[in-house]
Length: 603
Image 1: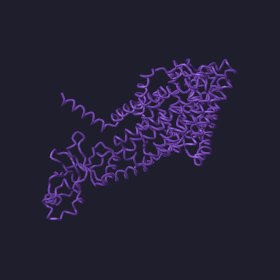
Image 2: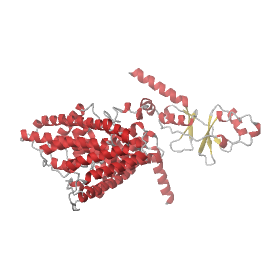
Image 3: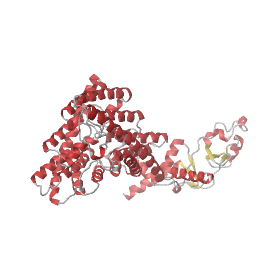
Image 4: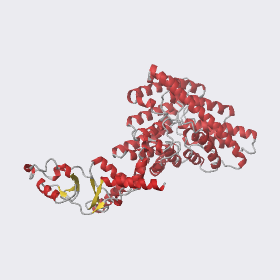
C-alpha cells in the first residue's frame, strides 16, 4: 500500500514538474487559499477597527452596505467628530515612521497598492519584499479605519501579489513564472474582497496594460480568485456587498442618457486623475523634501481628518453611501458635492503617502457621477429613465474603465454585484465610450500600453519563435558514450581517443546522470601521467543538465546559457536514465535563423 501511495505521489510530482496546466492549477489553488485567508483577516481588521474608532468612540453613524454590517450591534458613543483629525494625524505619524524607516522607496513607488503591483510586474521581475506588503497592509487598515479616503482593494491586491512573489521565490521559479504567480495572488485578493471571483481575476490580468491583458495568467488567476472567494464567503456569506433591487434595461431610447453618463464620467475621471497628480507631485512630494516623509504624512492625515469631520460622506470607502445612491435615497446636490469632495479627499489621503487603494474611491466617484446623471435623466424623462439607481452601477464600471483602462473586469464585477446581466447593454456602451474618451488618462503610473512595451516581454520576439520549436525536431539521435563516475583519467584518455564526441554524460552506480564532462574540462590534465590512476571522472564533471524531446528550444537555450555546455543529452520521456542523443548549441541557433528567414519569406 505504501509503495502504491509513493508511486502515486511520484506521479503527481512528475505531472507538477512537466505538465504546465497541472502545475498552474495547483499553484492557483494554493495562492487562492493564501490570498483568501489574507482577505479575511484584512477585512475583519478594517471592519472591527472602523466600528471601534468611528462608531463607538467618535459617535458617527455612517451607513454600511447590506453585505458588510459585521459589528452593527455595537452602540454608538457620544458624538465627537473632532477625534477624526486626531486619528488620521496619528495614523500619518505612524505610517510615516514605518515607511521612512523600512520602505522609503514606496513613497515614489506608484499610485497605490495596485500600481505597486503593476510596477513589480513590469520593472522588478515580479519581486515584492515581504516587509513592503506587510507594512502597507497594516497601515492601510489604520488609514481606512480612521476615516481616510482610501479603498481596501488596492492594498489587498498588493498583499496577494506579495504572497505570490514570496511563494515563487521559495520555489525558485523563473521571473516569468514569478510574475504570473504575482498576478494570481492579486486576483485572489480582489475576487475575495469584492466578492466577485470572475471580475477580480479579469481585473488583475488586464489592469497592468492599457490595451492588452496577460493571457498566460488566466488559469492561475481564475483558480486563485475562485478559491479565495470561496474561503471569504465561508466566513462572511455569499451575499453581494450591496443589498439592491434588480435592474434591467428596457428601451433603446435610454442609450443616449447612458452616452451622456459616459461623457460626464470621462470628465470627472480626468479631474480625479489630474487632481491626484497635482497634489502628489506638486504639493506633497516637494513638501516631503523640505519637512520629511513623516511630517508630510501627518499633515496629509490632518487635512483629510478636517475634511471628514466637516463632510462625513468622504470618510473611508463610502460603500454605504453608494448603496443609498443606488436605492435613489440621496439628493442630487449631495451627490454632486460628494463627487468633488471625494476627489479632493482621495488626493489628500493617498497623495500625501498614506496607505490605501484608489480602486474604491474610483468606484465611489464613478457611482456618484452616474447617480447625478441618472437623477437628472429621471427628472427630465421619467418615462424613459425609470431606474436612476441603475446609472450608479453603470457609472462605477464606466468611470473605472476610463481612468484605469480596464473595461472588462469592472463590467463583470458590476454584473456579479447585481447578480444578473440586466444592465449589460448600457454597461458595454458607457464603458467603451469612457475608455475612448479617457485614452490619454491613466490612474496607474506604471501601466504600459501593451506587452511589447513592458520590460517583462522584451524578449518575446525571440521567445515566441523558439517556444514554437521542439528539441525533437533538431537534436541528433544516436548512441551516446556515457562515463561512470569512477572512470580514471587513464581510461578516459582512451575513450576520448576512440570517439568523436565532445561531451559525455556521467552516471553513478544507479545509472542516474549526475554530471556532464566536456573534452575541454580535461585538457589541462590529460597529459599528466602522474594523475592517470588518481583522478576520476566524478571529480572533473560539472552539474548535470538534460532535456526531453518535447521541450521547446527556448528551454534548451536557457539551459545552454546557464551551463555554457556545447551539447546537452536528450533523455527519454518515460525514463530519465535512457539517453536518446545529443542537442548541439549550434542547432538551436540554426533552427532560430532558419525559422526567422522562413517567416520573412512568408511576409
